[in-house]
Image 1 (cartoon, one colour):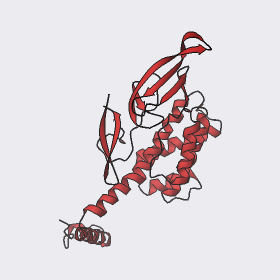
Image 2 (image 1 turned 90 degrees about the vertical axis):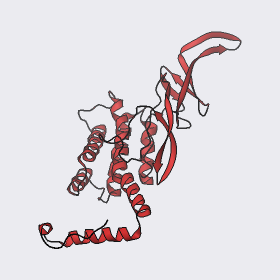
Image 3 (image 1 turned 60 degrees about the vertical axis):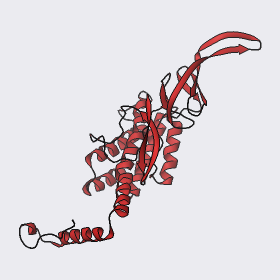
Image 4 (image 1 turned 120 degrees about the vertical axis):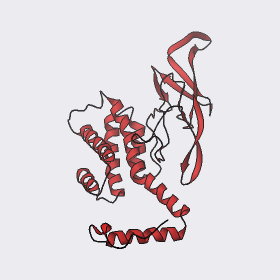
Length: 265
């Protein structure tokens, strides 16, 4: 079952579909600000998922196909199944429980605020994730390397970039997400303890982590800044700037004596 709800992007309410009970915010705060769009990958004989054609979360209808050759009907083929999206009315084709048309892309789309050159690598990883989980993981490692550069780091060494971001106050949960993608991506191209050919679902989870990193470090600050700039009166923003400047200029322990901080009420 799904309901039409709205998500706020750049101050605008945009309708989107997702299953009831689903959650996609980072951490325990279910109502935390986020610009991530919920995504349910196509799954065999599932009642609803994000359509590979129109990308909306929609009800899916399933059926078997008759084997007809010339004028002879050989009955239904148990291994060949078609699925119809109730929203766009297009059909996906499944063989032996796997989607073969359109080309199976079960990973979520990239965060909208990721740089264009990073999106190219991300989309390539999505395209090959079913056929080559190792290749997808290696490309996603490249994505976070470029994400680190987008966040102001050198982009030369991911481990050094993550350490630098930690020193600058990187949230521990984002650091963990970066390290997971980094380590699994390394294992994809070097012998290691993680065999992605045996555990392709691990590679698929990396897409969500890349989007979480981008959401927390890029999208949420961008959205907060847009609200701050458009909602607060100019006089209040100047008062806040004076307060912060005074706080930075004050010597240690100055809060216990002297003049009170500037009012921003």
